[in-house]
Image (tube, rainbow, N blue to C red):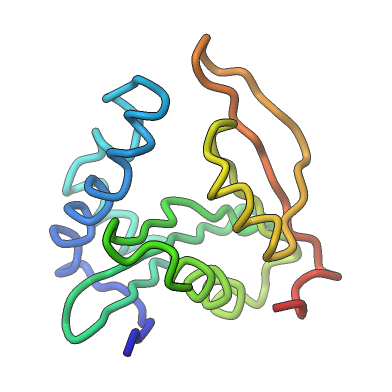
Amino acid sequence: MVEIARAVPADAGELLTLQRAAYVTEAQLYGDPFIAPLVESLDQVRTVIETAVVLKATDGGRLVGAVRGQMSNSTCLVGRLVVAPDRQGQGIGSALLAAIHEAVPEAAVFDLFTGHLSEGNLRLYRRLGYRETQRERVQDHLTLVHLRREPQHQSAR
């Protein structure tokens, strides 16, 4: 059974390992081994855990997923939604997003982004009430799709 709880600084190493495993497919998809989640340091992950809302999903003591939420004014910036490669498609990502929405009730909106080729991510976000707000070409091989979850979608599960 998957349990979701707040991450603590001691989780940083395991969280970074999971993040790297989960983002390898994204790096391959875009032909870029230097995407931010793969080059983030242990100290950077520890700092995020200490300064933002970082939720972890565990199953029998094993870390199987995580998500971050960072407040900026009245907006919660959602990032680094990761699920262990062997556990994807089992609802863990959906559960983590629902949990971050509940963990940050002061947020008026939730914003996130993903790459334009990440169809699975886009389907998940749209299913959970996120709507595309803009596309931003950041490199020849990468366009970021920015999405927002407005208040009227917050009760929809």
